[in-house]
Length: 357
Image (tube, rainbow, N blue to C red; front, top):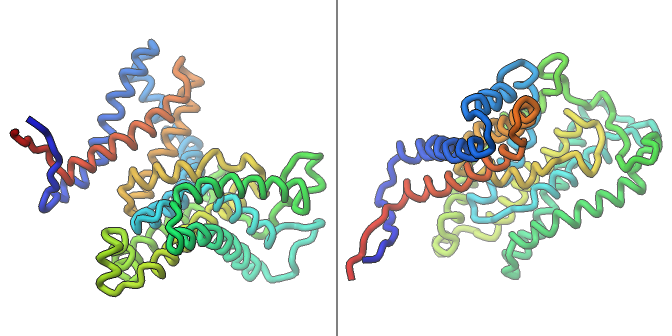
């Protein structure tokens, strides 16, 4: 007797909607065993985890602050993955976008560009989006023209960008007032985002992220480009046979994905750091892959997934200070959630069948 997977003729919408919830519930159950193994009370650990992420005004603001760049890198990955272009380079695109934003809006020699603030702000955001888009355009051309695997080129591109950023921070972009610390010149204070909540780090860049998530959903659902991206992602050969411009769609999708990740860098600078450093991102680009997969590549789902991942990361820091469980449990929860989500999605679209010899 052999087992094989048979695709469901019509996957249940309810099953697709419940798959993320089932995955998270299963993950929490499995991680509860790890918490108990560590000798900590499971209920109290999860209560502290939730309280550290959402239990106070300060905790919630920190979760929103962490979720903002995750929404954008998650959107960048979701847009690309839906067209079967696997962008693993959002980290590099974020850093290059941040550097481009400071190049346009930074206080070079203590003086910024002599332009009206709205024009300068628009130029800053445009520069960041273009930097991310052009960076991802190179792997897209290599894939469509030469068949080079984009997973390899985008992943290795992250390290090239970080080395370039390091060179710029120790060179022409270095802040002379940083006392030798490798950081860029500061952004013009007039270009920084307002606080979303007073006396917290949450900023109005979150509204940009939410707006872009809604825009990506509208594009994906109601535009010709969205239909073309879905068609190319479903079957590129069939799409080409039907006359769709597959290469052009792939290049456009890549540039859109890179632009979103580049904007994540600009929003992080304008909303939180005010300058670029090599440690400004704790891996937002890589975590964006997890966010996109947990969201099922749905732009609106990215909002919920980024809040969940950010809440786990922020809550674990608070929890580890109150109880003898290391904050690495958050990484375990996020990773296990991803694996559980992939399995839950698989079984919502396929069923196990027995093949008799």
